[in-house]
Length: 207
Image: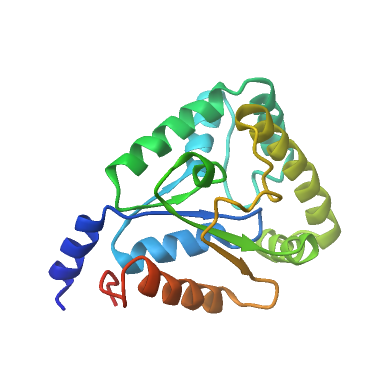
């Protein structure tokens, strides 16, 4: 099947894929890879929040910003004013209505009604090691930052929407334990599922 035919097939399906998981789970890397291989658009809730942070005078740059002092300060500001997250979620929902998109988001699995939702599970220790390697910091520092960040993030979404992030898995079509998997292995597992469940034997994949 030609690339053009594949793209036509994807457009007809109006696919919405939501990728979710706590920091260090590999959700952003997976979401970008899925978008690329299936010819879908990619949109990140975290990137949209960073744009709002810039408007507020923050300077988000480089990996690990969210776990750093400035990122945590913005997180606490978001907790006090839910308008930040409402703006981002409105944009994400508009993208979902257009279809043919991969959403890298903590909220969309609960808010989008017809998406295919993926949760990447990993222990806090494993995720802290990944973040430490990514950002060049001590694993203990990474774990401490992750715990603080996640407690605040969970509180924001519980207050806004009433769901328990990292506890409630009811919206997810696929929950994948990534503790013992490399990023490429996670990607290939997810593609096999998407090929057979969403795209029916890989008809939507741009190989």
